[in-house]
Length: 379
Image 1 (cartoon, rainbow, N blue to C red):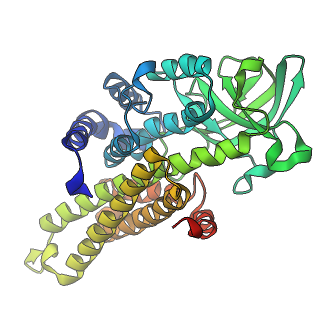
Image 2: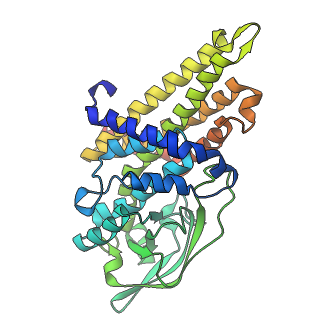
Image 3: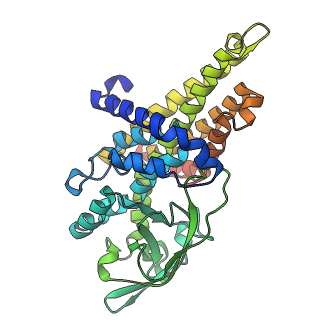
């Protein structure tokens, strides 16, 4: 599939890789160690038009297709996974607007996103993770307004983003068919944020609870039609799980490159450890897995762009496969580096910690296998 790429994709990869290596990588360790938002990456990506490149040109974005967006996220994740969440979260939060927003909503929110205002996605709750339809957050009609009450858990870039796509029950008697989607602004009265979670990885991306205390929303904040929110949420994930696969591929690629370089530098018994077959086999296996994960992810991205019938299967498959690969590859990278892999002098221990989250968020890999099983007939 790589051989079939138009030249602009590889040109984009080169541009993003260079930017990430020069302006993002130097801050990655500090971002992780101090659990701070990667402001340098945010500025560099925004200045280059890469923070929300998927926004259509008519709203001030780059109009990047799904494959181009995947490449952007992958290349940033090679050096700093937390920074790659900036374009990934912006896409996750705004895809519902692209799918179901009216012209006024698209003009207002996508234009603001292209100019640098972030967009997060609020689906999960303390008691509604994999079982998203069990959510307790409610929106009650009051005249022409909606009044939103409840909370959302594990929200990426919460407190940083300016806008939030929020799923809430508008008719609990209908279950999943009684869920609607809303756009909430950070400046709305009644919205607040919990303390940042203390996480194993992705420390540069704040993960916080979001609270809605009688947040009054005008009628034009309803996204799509009443009761169509859950379907919209699932459609959104079909498109955005692919960005998590891209993160995983990037993390794995970065770890592999470090391990390969180290294997040529480290000498034992009078020769490079690369010359030992045990190490060669580890590196070969890592490279093979990454290549397979990349191709599956790119195929899913093309299907996303075309909205093909088997997208749900492929988006779940690439997310599941690529994130398992990232966990395997980063674990082996730590092993290749030995004691140096276990300390933070080298970034592979950070990459290993980051890789673990990719197997969990936007649907655990157990859920992805369930999604695949339910969509086998589309193949």
